[in-house]
Length: 367
Ligand code: SF4
Image (cartoon, helix red, strand yellow):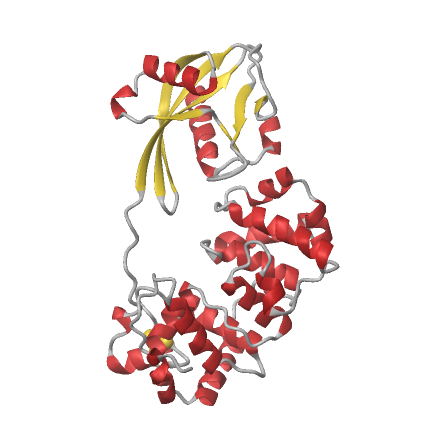
């Protein structure tokens, strides 16, 4: 069935569009480490890393990840702590936890070979339609669409599609468009070329139309509407959360760290003990001490406020007041609480917010 919004495809000379796009990509593509070969495992790792994260940021993470876990078997056997450590700083940690469990499934169920068909690959944890399409097309040459925000932006302009790309239902329209347009001879180059065009030329705010290899095929260019597309409604405002965190040392100068729960935000990462401040007026030492007692049964002595940091997630913002303090060594500790030296902290995976706090702490102590 031809979706109504795809009527504009009739205006595109598909063969010539494919040729212009693919030959540009072959000339201009960036030299990226995951493009060195078409190993489906490497394509998979790179695509998961690239979700919500810039290419420049991903490159060193990708190289180190592949160095630490060069194959599916090595990753499947690895400790979660080490896998989280390899991801430390990239954010969206559920992505790597899902990758880790999906890789175990590939090892057990598919003899360590990434599935090469839509049904099996889509059943793996964390592999949505985009990742499935990217692996199938790039690594296996299957003409499947790989539609992310970049591709929706580019195609909304080329085909003058005015559906709101923030709505999940719009993805289907763009997948249908790619199915119509994709080269069956070179699906890998075609999908990568669309992504590359979105990254280098058809950028969100000021597309470089004069340099664009598919300008002749682009309806937004001809109609002068490139700056109005894509249509994307704004997300709801992020929720603001106030926290108080404390870097606590014992008599030996060791620091108390706490492992977050195994589900939810930043699951299984380590952090400095913290509590939510529901009423801003309680940001006062006596009240905070009482909150720690209530939340964790910790009897702490709060020393000084050492600064504030902000940590932004897609849906909320943590505003954290950071303190230093002390605690007696002989508190009751279980597996998710540890006293560690600063050097031992290297073995644990922390979110970026904890690194920022530790920097505040070190700067404060050096004053
Ligand atoms: S001509 Fe401009 S708007 Fe159209 S695809 Fe190229 S860069 Fe994007």
